[in-house]
Amino acid sequence: MRRTAVLGSAGTLMAGTLIAGAIAAPTASASGGRGGVLEERGVNIAAERAADRGVAWADCPADWGLPKPIQCGTVTVPLDYQRPNGRQITITVDRIGNTGTPAERQGALFYNPGGPGGSGLRFPTRVTGKNPIWANVAKAYDFVGFDPRGVGRSTPISCVDPQEFVKAPKADPVPDNEADKRAQRKLAAEYADGCAERSGWMLPHMTTANTARDLHVLRAALGERKLNFLGVSYGTYLGGVYATLFPGHVRRMVVDSVVNPSRQKIWYQANLDQDVAFEMRWNDWKAWVAANDATYKIGDTPAKVEAQWQKLRAAAKKAPLGGVVGPAELTGFFQSAPYYDSSWAPVARVWSKYVAGDVQALVDAVAPDMADTAGNIRAENGNAVYTAVECADARWPTDWRRWDRDNTRLHRDYPFMTWANAWMNLPCATWSTRQGPAVDVKSGKGLPGVLIVQAERDAATPVGGAHELHKRLKGSRLIMEKNAGSHGVTGIANACVNQRVDAYLLSGALDDRNVTCDPHAVPKP
Image (cartoon, rainbow, N blue to C red):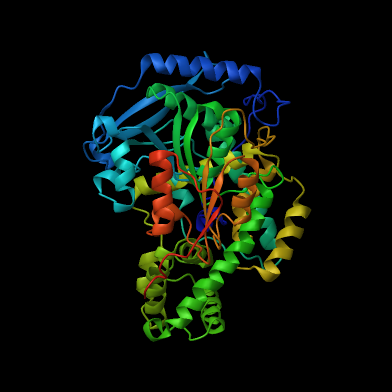
């Protein structure tokens, strides 16, 4: 799951008014969130239609940053699969052909990077950029990316004016008193209203199940009989839902950094679990910074590094750094360190400059770029889709007392992300459309073995999710990267992991049992 704390913390959100009767609630399902006969009929109609039409491939627009020979196209899908002949929306897709011979080609490999709200359109650049980790797989597969419904180049949604959304500084996500909590609750409710006002016609249909149906239609449009899929983070939940709805149409599936698919976890409890895991990985990073104090001079013990963090937060709270960086912006920047090992050194380097007296270096790294209109639109859209999908997928608590109790309790021991995470998700407490029920992810007839990859100390998708999905998907195999915590294992150089991913995608080979791999190399300062 994608976390962008600075975007979800208090800020100037556009208030909206829900017009009575403007948003139709979807029909309730008695099939555990998997949809019913009407959805099944609708997706079959849409897939047959897409197979007949195909995709009109062309060079991607120059300003998309997708170089030749990557090609782009669109596929139309129903907004509501209960009404396949009703309103349609557009899904944008891109591809690059396999680099091997025609005889080596095994089809298209579809990719979802996570989110909800992430764009997959840059996936083919792993070929144009000659990424060595994917060189063998690229010989056999076309690499296919897409923007899911609501995202970016597809029919997008929005909840607030993008320039207002990124405006800095935002309030400290950690409340000092009840007045702070009331202010955050008001902002969250206004954000939910803004989503209804700006995108209400799509909100009831912004579910993972519908995105899985869209993926099924994309597969048909590309002429693929079965799906080959790589999903990372939220993409693992999308993969699990696809495997539940269309088990007989899966050929190969790799899921990396796993969202816990339990209906008791999606999505409220999953976010609380994140808070605990983020604190663990935050502590890992502080220990690394302390061990490299000769380079960074922030503190030679984790306790001293934490003290510097609290000092930095306090200074930004008293007076935003450079007039634009407050505690919320700091949390958004620093969270990338527990998220990805690749951020350990860059974040520490910026912080080190600040400790040495260079405030501007930190401001330049953290502050939003108000002139980056396109980037701000992407950021606002990504947050809107994140919120819309998680709010629609499952039922959320509506009683503030439960949110307050759970997050107050967690914050005592896991303060790094808890309140920032709570405010980001709180719009779901006052969401305007029907919520859930969540899909009951499980194996179905014809589902082949799925390869699950997980880092043991992942912050964004805690390790329990990988074990839960492994239990639910019969015949799956789990590769665990021991004592590692970077999010997105398949993109990191680790021969123990990389070779098994290659073997599975190229030949379908799975180990006889689950595998534990040594961690990848620790970042160097």
